[in-house]
Each structure stands twice: as C-alpha cells, then as structure tokens.
Length: 397
Image 1 (cartoon, rainbow, N blue to C red):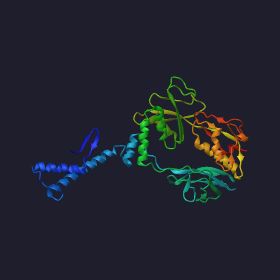
Image 2: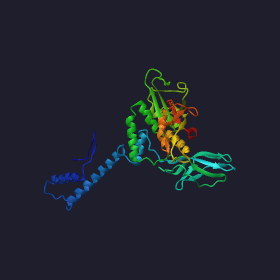
Image 3: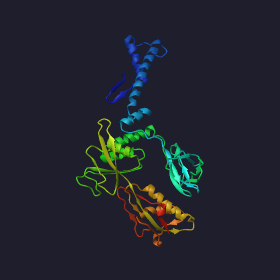
Image 4: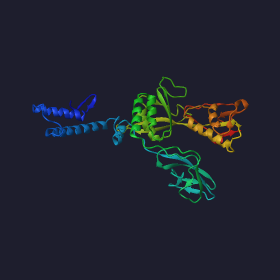
C-alpha cells in the first residue's frame, strides 16, 4: 500500500512494508516470483535504494505537515502558529524585588546601572532614585539572570556598585520569582486551552487579558441582561478589571481578542467610584480606531486591631512578626473584589511562635476601614477594589 493523504491526515507506510511492496513489483515486472530481492542481491540492493528514496521523501513531507500542526510543531514553527492564533510565547523574566536604600547625611543620587546582590545573584535597579539626607526610599530591582531565582527577605544586601552617600540596601520582602522562557509544551497547552475557552464572551475576555505581559490579577463582570446591573454596568456590556500590564497592550487584547462585536463597555460615567481608563487600537487593515474601557483596581486600606495570648516562647519581636504575617497573608490570598473576614487572619497570626488567639479568654481580632477598629469582623470590598493591610496599620495588644 503506498503512502496516502486524505481527510484523516497523512499515512506513511513503514519502511519494511514499502520495501516488500517494491520487491513484489520487481518480481511481477520480470514475471519471476523466485527473483532474489534480499539485500545481498543486485536486484535487492536496487530495491532498497529505491525504497529509501521514497521513504526519505515521505519523511520530509511528514515533517513539513507537522510544522503546520499546533499539536506537533516545535521551536520557531510553533511561534509562527502562535502568531496566527493571536498568541505568543512568554519570554523569560527575572525575579524582582523592592529594595530599601538608606543614605547618610550627604543624601544620594542613584542612577542605573546600580547593582545589589544576595551573595549569588545580582539585581539592577529599574529606575533612578534620589534619597534625602539621613533617609530611606524604595526602588524596584530586577535580577540580571532570568528564571525562577528565589531571594528571601533580607538577603539582597550586598552593594555591588559602591556610591557616595549610600550606607545600606535591603529587601524587606521575598523577591517575586521570575520564570524561564515558556517551553514548547507549555506554550502549546496554554494556546490550545485558551482557544478552546474563547467561545464565551466572559471567558474570552479573561483569556485575552491573561495573555498580556505584566497582568497579575483579573476580574471580568458581564451584564447580559436588558437592564443596568446593581453596580452600574450597562445592558449587554462588560466591565473588565485588570491589575498590571500596559494600557496599550490591554486595549489591543480587549479589542482584537476579547470583546465580541455588539458588546459594550462600562465607562467612567457608569461607575464613577471606579478608576476606569481607556485605550485605543487602530485596525491595520481597515484603519478604523476602536476604543476599549476597563478599570484599574483601587486599594481598600484596612486596619487591624488584635489582642492575643502571648506564650513563653513568644519572641521579642513577636508583635512585628504578627503584623507582617497579617500583611503578607492579605497580599497573597486576596484578589480583586474579595471581602476580608477577621477569621481569615487567625492562621497568619498563630503562625508566629507563641501567638495564640483565645477568644473565650478575651482575645479578639477586629478589622475595619478606620484606625483601631472595634467590634467589626468583616470588610466588604467593591468589585473593583483590592483589600490591603500594611503592617503599620496593625495594632497588637
């Protein structure tokens, strides 16, 4: 049976089967079923050469077809298919950290490149910084080596670029871990999964925005009714909220891959309390300019007031640790539109040695939007808000 291509794909015949078929053709041609066609005979060698030529051609054709198949394409061939699918491979990025830099009485003007190290990996500041005399300020720094580099709190302290006026540098929180360049398998799976989900308006928008570089949190509200909804989204409209990513990239994602024709947006006049921004995208084919609207999440500052039982193993800096544990939990566990319940903080508080919440013994955990809250155990966030708790806004008794 020869190599065939039909609606089911390309069916390549095995080398052994193809050689047997050609050997039989020789026997039929010479009308001699006893003709020697093994590899040691002259005819057999000719059969093998002819088979190899056809098999090589079929293999080349099979490889060519795989280049156009997202299930098997690799490397640059997969990258080209991703472009057709309105996707792209995610590049490698370096870990990032917020560095607190302290200056002496002279003050300091710090310009790029300025390097700080955790002893193994260097971090370069992302922007220039001027620090007043005897003061501290913060700046974001990115690891010079891409990939999932972990630098724990308090480890990025070695100043690799000595500068007059700078006395110390330190990261007061763990670095945000970077990532390696997306592999073929990772890029393929993400693209195929995203494409499968984009049939729904809501999921389609979420998928389009999740592929935008820098977006770290998303929420999409859809009003598919004929009436304005409870928060102000107009009929048959969407209200995307995105944290991170550039305005230009988000606008392009919404217009080209997210919001279907006929679907409107919630604008600033619809939800005045939200921080709604807009962006445009020029269609390269028609030249028409389209506008998209979405919100940037607003921080909802929450204060915490707690009384705990402190056992004998409670450390000297226990209060500071409890405050930081609460702040870290909220920043990692809550996202856009999540409410905060006081009970959610129990585990974070009791993660510190010797810290116990004995509610029956008079201990309490109160939260609110004003300092030193009393009696309140729930803070409700709006759909476009993100609850934040700074360690300085926590009172520990």
